[in-house]
Amino acid sequence: MKVTELEKQISEASSDKEKVDILNQFAYDIRYADSEKVLELVSRARQIAVWIDYKPGVANCWRIRGMANAILCRHDQAFLDLHNALALFEEMQDTDMIAHCSSSIGVLYAKTGQYEAALEWQFKALATSESRNLSGLSGAILGNIGNLYVS
Image (spheres, rainbow, N blue to C red):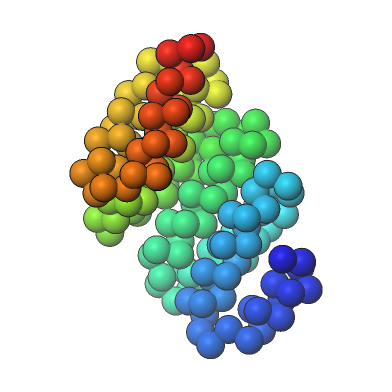
């Protein structure tokens, strides 16, 4: 999706919640291609989400921002962002997103050479994803664990 298409979708959105979801999804989709743009998009989405008290939207902003900061090698900020997201997902008892965040934190620990912590977080994510029968996520986490053992 191009930025002009994004702006069109946002202008046609039926609610502020939908605007937040559109911004977050686009940011997630381009996280590897343009991480700096991701930071702009999630900032915009977070402002709206906070204004309307849309906690899932705020939590996703933190999660996607954390991923972008990890890609940009801003590890300290990425850890803060991902832990902010995790805290909100835990507060909402969103176990699917708790598993996603836990895995992302594990990946970040691996990226910073902290393999023991990375394994702990991946196993936490795996337990959560298996309890929810998230087979696709469980497979990705098992791949992450395998990569850690190879490292």
